Length: 465
Image 1: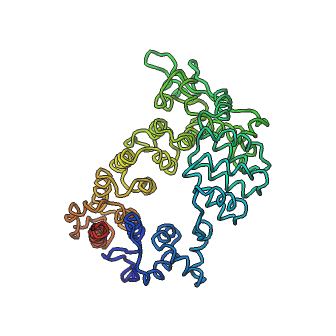
Image 2: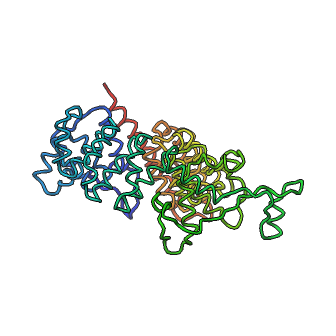
Image 3: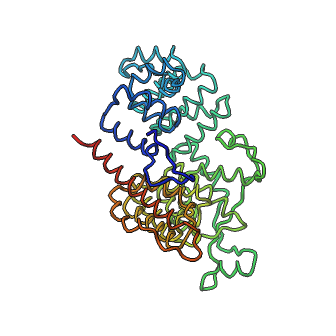
């Protein structure tokens, strides 16, 4: 793929950007169990050297020969660093003596690779291995080893993690607390639930400050609407600190709201229907919150929904994609929405983002598109193409859509290329359009169609018997 990417004047031209397709090509080749011809290895290592995101797939494809080559050329040393254990082969996990020997005597990278491999196969055995040397490990190593427990995290890990709450290292304590709070049945989660629930209540008599607020918080019968009231903690006691609450607030944050957000984030989401009158997550999120606490409370619920992988709460916090503010009642930013979408299944995620684009266009959708499965599901692909077409017909500034266009080249289903033929002509430019915009749009759609056809041919070649 060593051809120049841009034509004169910085425009990308109509030719597909082959380097951008390399990750998909490697994924397909690896899925089929292909290996490269040896003479292609130097080019493959050069490509991976320039792009860290390519390295795992490129090194899997390249196989052991790449590590042999990397020992001969300093430019390719990254391959040794990127491979677990520096390219050393791990023992068979059934060979207890070799596993014990590598764990006791191996280099740090080899030990991390061993623990990760064992954890993905036999979580309990990996934890037992870690316990044998835990007390003598260095703090920074304990942190890395503890992080490996994210894979296959289960209630059986609780006693070990509870022990780690008393660790000498603050970072180890914080990681142990985070992992325990991702186990809604853990004792730490129960302690956090008690603390968080003490801060949040329903007030059936509350009316907010202004006359307008008072009117909107009353039902049609004239009775006040139930309102959530918040009383944030007045101190961060040693028990809270032991359970992972960071006492010192960042600059610009109030201490009490900082502690409150951490408690709510770590409390099991099942706490709230019990605490707030048996309401569903959707009903809870729709309740008014007194005294400007809504942003803080909803942002903490967002973090909890992501940490606990709770799809029902994520749906409630996202709201309808067609809502005027597009954020739902709870999500505080596009980044937050993208994380919430990550807890939903691929089809539901694509459907939500398609609805968002249909209502709000593409200007805010880039981050949300990044969490959707590739190739995009048909409703999402159609929504993106329709929005690009609307932007083109409106005479929009075409360069502001180049990021979405690049994503579409990589992520649209190749079968969509037939629907795009009508967009290849240079459109009539409205009076207020950017000069030359029509030509740019036609060129961009031409490149999109050419790229989709190339991806279809690529997939067909790699899947041939």
